[in-house]
Image (tube, one colour):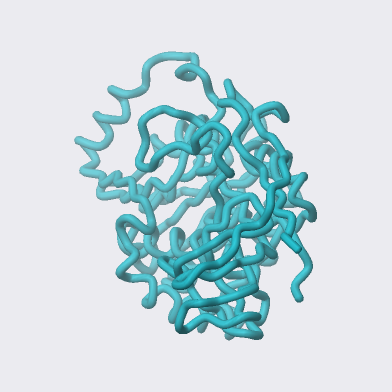
Length: 342
């Protein structure tokens, strides 16, 4: 009998925040694995801010998801059937199945996690793309030195939490920025940041300036908007700014209101001799994945890096989960449990 494969496809391109009609849940027969292929069954799906960009047909670093195509996404899956050397039925793998129950793979770009990995969903977070993004952006572009001040926005999130903890391991003073008292408390008390400022506070900019009394040497940018406005005047000469995302702008349909701040930014870059560099993690750093994996696995095992996962259940809840990520309503790395493991 054929297996039924639920899929969420892109039904239309959103204007602003995605709505239910932009997605369509459909059922088709699961594909069959041929020679040189394997059939994968999705257990966990990662939800990440970059997915909003893939829903748009604007020019970007990657092709958009086509209308009627399965939404893109990183997954942790189990091998159902394999005709590929090095993979067998029951193995757990890190793959890119997208928003669906089953997918065919030829093994390219798939990482075998073994038959009994501990916490397999961690491969979508601290031990996967978000952790890798934090590690390389901070250490290769930010280059924090002992005693310097590192500031990271979305500090309780999948990337920001790792950035701050790695910076602390390197001896830096670390200031987090997060939304709400609960997240700020977690960042400071559980993750060990030196301070965390609530960006929702009316005097957010003043609080940030007070706690960064020696200025900011590294600002890890993944939010933009009013957070960067508060950071910009505090940046020290020689500051480094890794740019991995601008989540505050992903649903925007026009430029933000207010005065044009581009000339201010360019002037600061010039006079403060700052480095501001964007990066796409696997495009730029795939060759250094093993270096990251070795360090991060060791830090997690030793308890030096803590990790929080925001787990929801049901493929049908993925669209709402993505909007929660874009609005900052998640608390930790957002993962959808699609199926129970076998």
